[in-house]
Amino acid sequence: MKRTGITLAVIFALGIAVGGLGQQRLSAQPEPVTRTVLLRTDVVGAEGKEAVVVFAEIAPGATTGKHWHAGQEIAYILEGSLSMTMEGKPAVTFKPGEALQQTPQQVHEGQNASTTAPVKILAFYIADKGQPLTTAVPK
Image 1: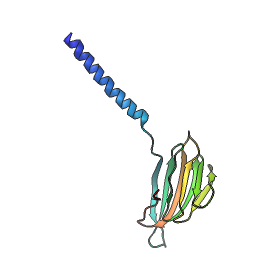
Image 2: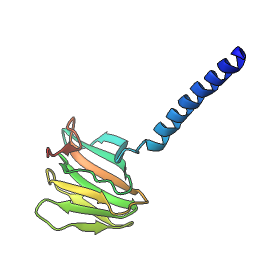
Image 3: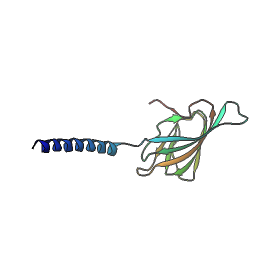
Image 4: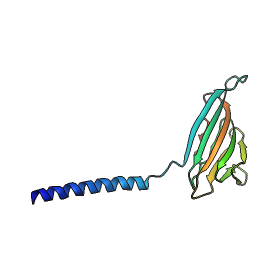
């Protein structure tokens, strides 16, 4: 009888632990925006400037939040549909195969127009060396 009670207690404890881990896994949300720097290099002939190539992915339905870039940004949409709002201008939607550019310090916000598929972007920056590529705009 005592052995049965211990066995049931162990099974119960394991069930709680596995259930808790399963709940964490199911409720884990992906990062809304991920950025991976693919290349960072000095710009020859432009003292203090660097070129940076970034792969960015915006989760379904996610937004980048309002932000700006210290340098020139040129982006190419690989997959998905991106709705871009630039401060003082109406939203524009970019689809795969389309490119866009942002001038330095232009406040803008991107939103994934899909609730099921990510937006994948290849972005190129020419910026002052040592400066952050992206700066969030406080709400």
